[in-house]
Amino acid sequence: MATAFVDSVAAPGPRSATLKSKRDTVSRAEGWRRRGPLLPALVFMIIVTQIPFLFTLFYSTQSWNLVRPGSERFVWLQNYVSVFKDSQFRSVALNTVVMIVGTVIISVALGLIFALLLDRKFIGRSVVRTLLITPFLVTPVAAALLWKTSLFDPSNGIINWLLSLVGIGGVDWLSRFPLECVMAELVWQWTPFMMLLILAGLQSMPSDIAEAARVDGATPLRLFRELTLPHLRRFIELGAVLGAIYLVNTFDTVYMMTQGGPGVSSANLPYYIYQRAFLGFDIGQAAAMGVVTVIVTIIVSTLALRLIFTSFSGTEEAA
Image 1: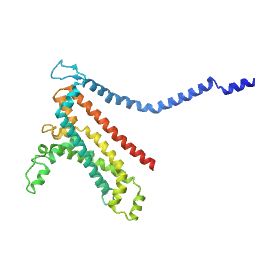
Image 2: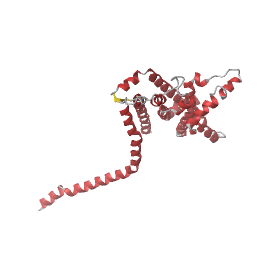
Image 3: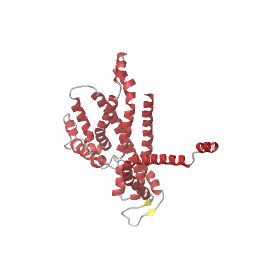
Image 4: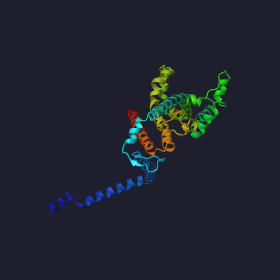
């Protein structure tokens, strides 16, 4: 009888399995209760982004031009081959890279300068900060029209009026320097974003370390190079990646200011895809270009974000 009692204690049997199953059920229920509020957003995201992308993948394998009814047929990867053979596509891709890299570098440099200035206390700092933030709050279409008509207009533009005061004749900026004009407008609009991000990094830096460095005789330049800039590196990288991801999708500024011209000298990938789809009516090649752009953007942004998150996690572990 004692042996039977010991055996029953040593082998809990189905009762413990039932208790474990209940715990697992409670844990799963708790997990679904926490994830439940996110399901509508997830479903909405899938409907709005993933399903259209699947249709785009399907269209990219079709030879389909809207001006030729009945021309739709399956061509496998022929559209992708045509895309990479297209010299205009390569030129537009280069324009996109130049536009993104140039805009991001100049915006980060100006944002760093403005952030360093705003980190100091002076009379009217809040007013100056508000004025510097304003360009980021302007609608991109309105900002592009403002720059096109008020600054770069060859007859009534402010830039040509200023040049006329020193005897320089009028310049048709949008015809002679279309890509540079688009980049100037984008820099004007994205510098406040970089400034705010870097300013947040400056205000998160411990003040006692900087004070100790000043007491030890560190010059302002050395303090910036060896203390401030390494601390801001993560914020600068994050701003550069976020800005680049957004600038890949820039369409309204190019459309409103230059319409991609002259030729394709100021066209970027979104605008060229728009031209091929809605002006050339070549749905198959436009879809293939869109897929290539999305894949390249995902690869580059994933690698960049992984480096940034590694930097952030490494800094937190060191702290």
